[in-house]
Amino acid sequence: MAGLLAFHAHPDDETTSTGGTLARYAGEGEQVVVVTATDGAVGEIHNYENPEDLVPRLAEIRSAEMAEAAEVLGLTHHEFLGYRDSGMMGTEDNRHPDAFWNAGFMEATGRLVHLIRRYQPEVVIAYDPFGGYGHPDHIQVNRVGTAAFFGADDVGRFPPAEGEGLWTPCKLYWVTFPRSRTLAFRRALFEAGEITEEEFHRSPAAGIPDEDITAWVDVRDHVDRKFEAWSAHRSQIPEDWWLFRVPEEARPEVFGRESFMRIVSRIDAPDREDDLFAGLR
Image 1 (cartoon, rainbow, N blue to C red):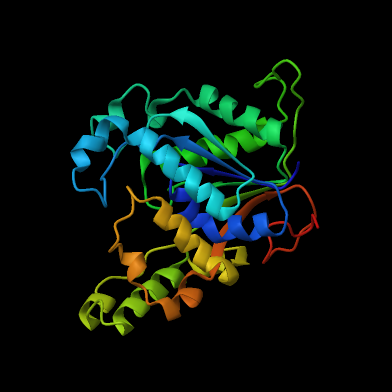
Image 2: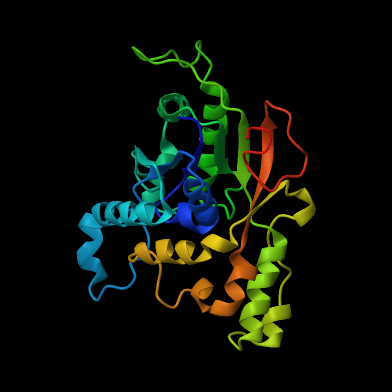
């Protein structure tokens, strides 16, 4: 068992924020588990001529795409937590009773607790409190994922199911989007002539200041698999997606490191890391 468990909001999020990391550790023989909170059945549909015809079975389509991406990345296991995509704040989808945003906090945390106990990961990955960009499901991943990390060995709040043992994960990380990567994206697009100099300088770079990031994982050898996994999410990612416009020769520099903030470590580990298993291997 052991290895890592990454908790994500929708199908394709696992690739966007952690695809290289998942592929790297799977290639190194670690157990790599992804739990997807929602079915991804809300939002735009790309790369199909009649997207409105797909809406009734979009969850099914995105489940199949997730399975394909999981195979590309080498995941050991994938699980859906069982909630409906919440859509954006203020929409009808966001008010749906089955939406992850409206899930009972303890009930949702309990579902993830049981999966942590089943797979017994040493490392758990969730999102930062803003969920990267403020999507309700991403914010909920932070809340539920962080609580489940601490709840997996809490017998009082989360009594074990029959035959289930407690589990104490060693390390908790939040995915971050570093400011330097935002600048690298924009610089690559500018140098390729995709945006103007005015657009390049128009607004300050978003993202977490680099000095606040505690772990940078080198995934340069896995960038191609990240892009292949993105392509597997056909209905979600348009062929002319802005990240695909980064020139191929610039991709190792732009996408070659994935970043995290270590929130908890129950073992001795360096303050700055290049390996999520630092102190464990």
